[in-house]
Image 1 (cartoon, rainbow, N blue to C red):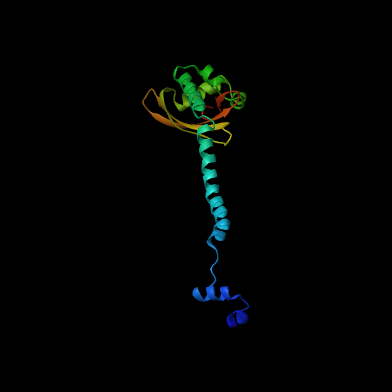
Image 2 (image 1 turned 60 degrees about the horizontal axis):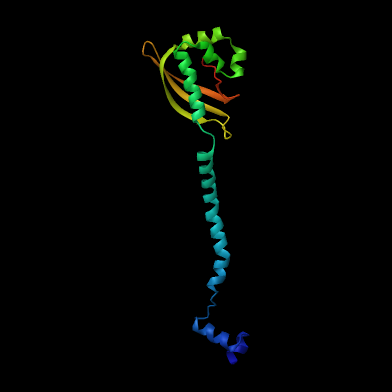
Length: 164
């Protein structure tokens, strides 16, 4: 009882304190009720970010549409169908140059007889603008890499100054 009066604690508390070497033990369950949700939130935030990116990557816009527009555009050039290729250009380019100027630009660059599609990527998060690298091969065998820009302007259209 003397110990209880000196410390201000009941005898059972003094005895428990003496057994533990004078240290008070905090309940383990109480720590996990606070730390558990904090750790859970810290693990959930990066998971949600990665899951959101994967959803955008696989369920977002499809790069195949701009890729096929470039393929169609270059095939028109290979077949000397400049008017059809010109019509597949965006309105900004068509307003700036004529079909004759476009044809002149194609000849200056070297009319392709074959091509290979390269890297394609969207330029904006919404998927309304894209870029693609194309390797054009002319009749002499010379290969010219061209980076084409596309816009979704009433369908995918080449919107690039490479041809005029």
